[in-house]
Image (cartoon, rainbow, N blue to C red; front, top):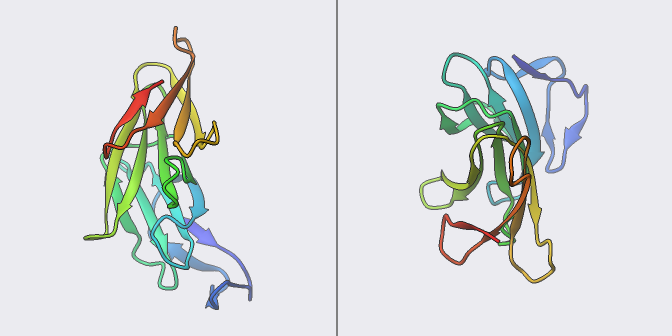
Length: 167
């Protein structure tokens, strides 16, 4: 279970957290990050759960926090981070499954669902970082892959939705 202990502190927007209260009914959390993925004035908490054989990726938004929004089920991601990697002005949720794939999840305002954009897949994928690396307004991801002939690759976000191309 994931617990949040902030005592009597409150977050921006006067969203109080009761001390020693359970925040999410999420078993086996293995990775968390905080950022504003869903447009609005509140930060979300992204959580990877390894519970069960399937695993899940959740996003919780205040002030209710509960229940968290399911972003994806069926995959246990090894790590996640929140950043505007495609440089469209909205933060993205990037998920890494070591040795398998790197993907970017975008919040779709129509319907409140998430769209998955594969960036790179294949053996050895181990970490990623991204942003406007060349200061040209184009989002790029650098993906590291251990034990691979392509140890470091750069992928650019194209004007086509859901497409990252190898530079």
